[in-house]
Length: 402
Image 1: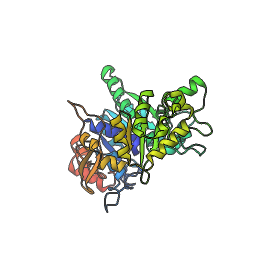
Image 2: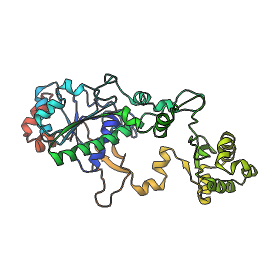
Image 3: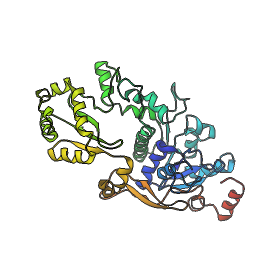
Image 4: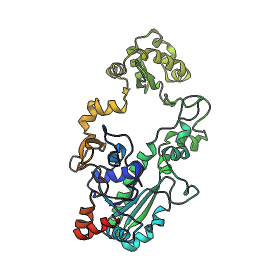
């Protein structure tokens, strides 16, 4: 795979395929020190390491890949890229719309090099349409997608979902699209251009809100709603997140039916929990604010883990809300699953990177190496893959082509 992707929306997709066995070759610009991907060399950092090789996000999203440099301002670099395209199954990128065309490597130009090439672009707003000229970053695509509008606490402005939801979703759809296009080529011999847009991928996260609007013509957000700590559902109550003892400590509780409520009431052990208003779902929904307040008073002085363990033992769905650091460092399920893999990086040393949340009994994923340093694999790719001599490669480096 000839890979121009950056950030998580693109680089995350090709990382998935690298973990599943694809040979992914990153193309980076030596003049800009690889900063086509603005995450290269940016925090978070490991220890005291700094510089273009030390960026934690970049090193996570690109683990398992090879990396070469090509200065595409030079025609010799463009010729090398055409050689690499001819040897590749797919070309992937997530630049803004039109960038690859301006570089001289849009889909038609790539087809001229390799007629059955699979070309996959993942722009924030897609390759055409009224938003194609917009520049995208996580919160921007999230806002246009409608997800930001649904977030937040009652009577306060929309809060947004953080930076990475669109990127994760877009990356998974991009990986799936690459595989679908390659499968189509295997069946028919035809390549194709696959156009993705993160704002459309984000639309798949609307779930019940989209259904509620299309069927009932109700907006996804109205004054005072939704309470983002509550799962707003006419089928379940109480169902949400409650504060526990300590700074920013929370527990999730879901009461699926009247039987769950009976078990929760017994576990709570509070006189108010015996109120007849709570026995049936209709009563719990009618007085949901009061019910949530009372549960919150009960959880407020208790440890989140103890609350979850008590309720799970009683047969009520519950779980502590874990910080990322807790999930990675202290949750036994994470270590049992093997989600975080330690790989040796030539500049940073041993560093943990994210694996895949799946396990395959016969063809499991693997991360065989850390993210590449800038131009780390020039010799292998240009020499062994494309067949150039050591003398040629040395001259290309001396001339600033690589």
